[in-house]
Image (cartoon, helix red, strand yellow):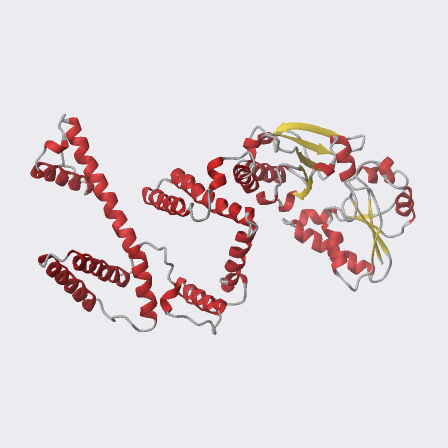
Length: 488
């Protein structure tokens, strides 16, 4: 039998009478650490024990320390009943207790001891019913933080851990945000120090009885980065007393805005402007959450359903990451992805066409490429690029004939055929024709603005210049793009 008891959060006055008597009476007492106020007082009463403090010096990781302690305890318990004493309460932030309980062949009995949570709450004068988080400094991650609640971070053993806690908190809070360093709460050695966040790991000494308290954030501006805040903002805009424009929007009315914002993201990517990209991605996110809020208002779906659906899809379609499959190359990933998509849709699903999967709302060139890819998968494709070029020239010839015949309708159709044939060339060479035309548009914009700037500097009006004069400035713009140092 291993009896695990808690030494409480502070000095001997906090120790329950039953635990006190057991500590004095036991013959085989093991301590995870003797660095606890109770032990010094019990030593004066003649208790004997074996501590595991030396094991901490042997390992760089706490996991290894805990594993060795548990292995020793299991060995000792094979021949005798033992008592294992830990700081605080055995079931509060005590990894060794959890490791012992995992062994189903081991007899483990848990006995009390006051945890440090109660004295910390009392010393800080906070009520956990207002919202309370209790987190481990050794495994603290930023997305666990609920900043609108009271947060107590335990096991801040040393300056290194305090530094990690500081850096994690500073990802979401200002450097000057005030936090509390709490040591030996409820004991005669209690110490509570309020410091700005950036000083959390400076000056103040921390030890194995130290925790950090982060007060709830009440300033709305400090929570603007929180998705829950954003969701509440959109709900307020759509709700009673909200914005008349937002209230009248529908899925249909928002379609054009989603498309516009998507193209603005593409522009930001092409401009290589990270700040602008972050802003434009925010605008796309706004559209997503607006659609989700409309779905919630209509009782159809919520943003939780949206996130759950895409999370399930990502897990399901990446078995090489989240399952037992393997995919060594990007091509293998794409192949697996398509196979899984087909399985999801079911083999019995009747289709009018294999092209039905292509999204109807895609831009023209992008849709052309997708149609061509689908057709190529069933063998409707050329094996070489030469006949593709022949098709381009054939379509150009047919377009010229339609123009010569002054047949506007036929000319438009033949021009579309030219674009479709050129999209096929782009697919063969593995680039996006939409991206290509976007690059050309940007190039035209830059060169034309160069012409405007040159003429403005000379006090000339562009509409009064000859084509030859404008073309000469255009050539200067091209030279500048090539980095010609002789360009003037």
